Image 1: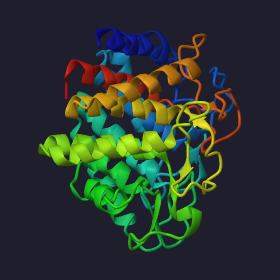
Image 2: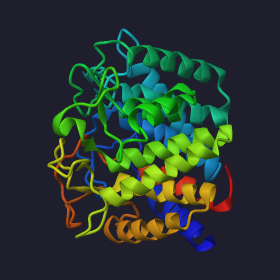
Image 3: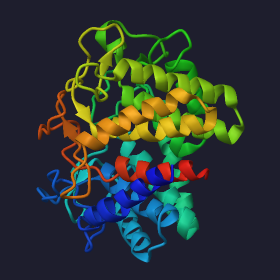
Image 4: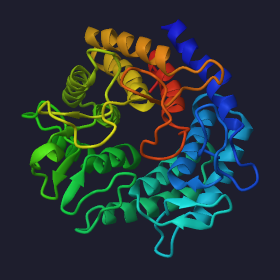
Length: 370
């Protein structure tokens, strides 16, 4: 376990941190994330989602890895940019801006707002800024109201048809809000005991949808969601929910693992048909990073041996296929066979979030820290 902990800390210190510190916009704040896998900047446009995520990552590095003043300085500069330039007249965070902050695409993703809240709260753990704490509370309250309005559809980069709910909303609010309502929606509405797998889409009344839309499953989302819920359940001392979460993780790895080439599919169909969303056969870095942390957390909280067996399988495949020794970071997009691709999937960015978050959380769980 010490060797594993050291591996992740080295990945952060020698790879992830130098890579992303070079990509920061030291003049206006934020990060240049529209780049190639190798780090070549393709555009200085800023997707709000990625800006908020790098603010969280920088704040978390200060809180969890090394109290380097530069981390906090750049996190603050990014948050100042977002609060000054990232919102429309109604207070909603827009999707995309110029480098200087002029709006290019409006408020089409509630996830941008949620990641801003996530970043503000992580920053406040270090800096204790009462103004930022209040700002996070105000943004969150608006998000909670908005997602319950009948015409809510702000779920870019994916389109949410009318009359639908998506698992991603209560999922992210479980982690960002810390409130009881959202993990209960995840566990009682989406991860129902009678279901083998967790669907991404339901009706507004939480009923199942017909066809491939209703049977679409995102294994990585389900796994990430479960560790969010496990964090909540651990605070409550709820061992039964933790055990349920661990079993959901296991089911999605069994169903989502490619038996021919290895790795976790981006999407699957619960009935064995053609998945609803495109690129489902691809292998992306983020489901694997989420699985690595979720499995070690589940093992720590339940002691189940299968968690380590699956961890070893995911670890070996992910480090062999996503690692880029020449940059110190990970490649983010592979085809089914595990070969690098440049095809656009979701956002046209290289994202400074999932890998550093896992690399920070995994040493904590190995060391027994909460």
